[in-house]
Image (cartoon, rainbow, N blue to C red; front, side, top):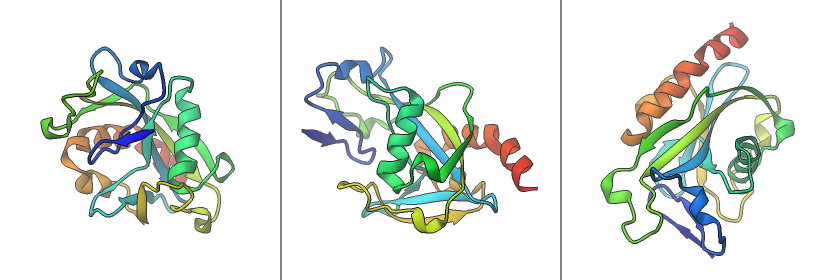
Length: 181
């Protein structure tokens, strides 16, 4: 059985006996973030289902996964793209963290998740846009997507993720500049 937390849609596997390992001792859930760019240096920006909220693809790391395993699983689940459609260009040097606002924290869940710690990946799209399929999963995360200018996501993302987005994009900017200039 899967349960989804409001706004974050953090999936908690109720049948997993080791689910406590998904959340660290500080209350952060391990997660991957995906920055996918095209040949023009624009970024894939996805609209959350039924909301006027946009974000990069992201998702939790399961107990038996490496961040790289989670990257490709989440990429496929959320966009329909596979490892063959992208090239990994970089990953963040460290875990980037954000806290959830208090009204998004589930008080009755144990262990309590207060936010996400994310390993970010920069991917280059090497396939045609037609390969993007937001309906690939039986529980789609997104119902729309577009290519946007590199810095636009920092302005548009929900406020509590803004600092992490800015850190990830600043770290990845030299890679994009080198490939698109």
